[in-house]
Amino acid sequence: MRTARVDRVASRRQQQLLANTITHILLIVLGLAALAPFWWMISTSFKTEFEAFQIPPTWLPLEPTLEAYGDLFLNQPFGIFLYNSVKIAVLGVGGQLITSSLAAFAFARLDFPGKNVLFIIVLSTMMVPYAVTVIPLYIVMHRIGWVNTHLPLIVPAMLSSAYGTFLLRQFMFSLPVELEDAARIDGCSSFGIYRRIALPLMKPALATLGVFSFMASWNNFFGPFIFLDRKYLFTVQLGVALVQRQWYTSWPRLMAGSVVVTLPVLLVFLLLQRYFVRGISLTGIKG
Amino acid sequence: MAQSQALTRLAVRTKIQEIRWHRYEGYLFVAPLIIGIVAFIFLPIAASLYMSFNKWDMVSPPELVGLKNYARLVSRDRLFWKVLGNTFKYAGWIIVPSVTFPLILAALLDRPIRMRYLYRLAFFLPLVTSVVAVGLMFRWLYDGEFGLINYTLSWVGIDGPNWLSDPFWAMPAVAMVTVWQGLGYNMVLYLAGLQGIPDHLHEAATIDGAGPFSRFFRITIPLLTPTMFFILVMSVIGTFQTFGLIYVMTQGGPINSTNVYIYYLWQMAFGSSKMGYASAMAWILALVIFTVTMIQVRLARLWVHY
View 1 (spheres, helix red, strand yellow):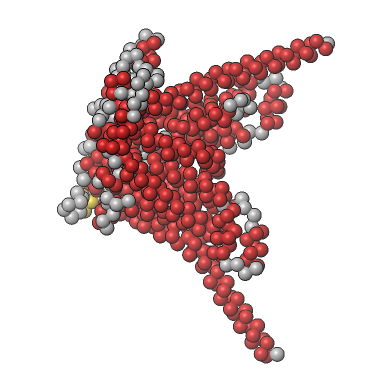
View 2 (view 1 turned 90 degrees about the vertical axis):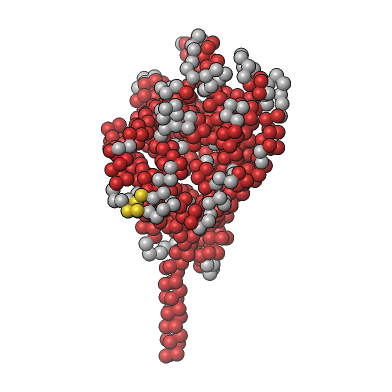
């Protein structure tokens, strides 16, 4: 009787162990499939042109060299490209956080005629394909002399984020109203409540939105591609595409470029990843 | 007495005025957003619709041609149909893998195993990498002679094709990159879905003697169908608007076999300066996306359990 139970427990444990082992094996295989391309990118970027074309390929560079990186920063203005990307992302994201949080506060807490209709109109813009608006935008930007400036990449991002407004409004609903009511009774203005109470409480959601928009801005290719064709205005993404046009199969250079565009966004992601995961589930499921 | 009444009346009036003003205060808060949305989304939509009825090369003045752009696209532009077909093919290639692979990942990661955090991180990396970097990385991996993929295949005696310059293989090759990149995002959606499944369902089924597999197929999957539906709809919408990956990897080639809708639209608008024609294309795309999504919503009744 007793041994039977011990046996059962033992076999249960064995089963669990087996299941865990299989899970780990599967995850390792899939994980490698996800990571191998990155390994290959980094490894190639440190190889010489000659070694990149060796068969069989070498997993680690035999004679690691910084030649490809040197080329990007000395023969191409990659420093400037990086600066441009940072500038566009920071200004766009900063502006977006302000306009979206203001609007989200009003949609969640204030009452005004036509509020719901207005909110639905804002939301509906998320369904409009970019292709529909990009041509007229280009023409308008061309007319007012904004083509070949960074403005078409910054100003619309600052002012028209329906996504950000939606995300922050959802978050506002999860915050307690009592603090705000107390402040109002004490004579605080709406703007005061927004500045002193709502905004500090919204910090986690602002971080989520910030991470997302930063990545979207950094990785944006189509926008800069349409609006910029002067080299010194290029973002890093355009810079890498430029490297590809120039040296179509110089793999160490192309991979070095890929490493340079990926690294900053990777750092941001690693530092703020918990906000990132939350953002996906917050808007994905509830939306 | 009369004086104090007058005072109260005055106080009430100012209070009412204050409330009236408060009623409109919200507009100040939403003003920047609304101005932006009108200027950068609504006006462009209207302009785009108007332009689609015009012939315009941005040099000579626009010329109103009615529905001619649309008629020409549908009846005389053979590349248009090819490109539309390619876009559907592209979506077709990604649907099954982008719904199933992340599900497997999420199911594996939903259990309390060690290093879960690290695995999750691995599947996120592709997501945060730009299409330019991803495209270049895979161009290199897919290289016919020196690429890692064909080298790996040669271990098992397969002589891999020159993926991106083969009219048949180029499209599935590009599609797989899209799937690879979306793994992490869809996995998180599934993980959130899995957390929403109450434990007692699994416990009850276990007591009734259901094994892990039948529990997975009879409890987990049916309860995840809303997530699957969401992933399906979003993936299809995403593929219909792909540009960067195609530009970096194939430039629409070989012989237009990977030329997809937005890529062709870009060629028309910014390569050939046919602004009216390209605007008409954009509206057809919006209509196609809308129709496909509506069909999916209709079909959802048959398989999605809410």
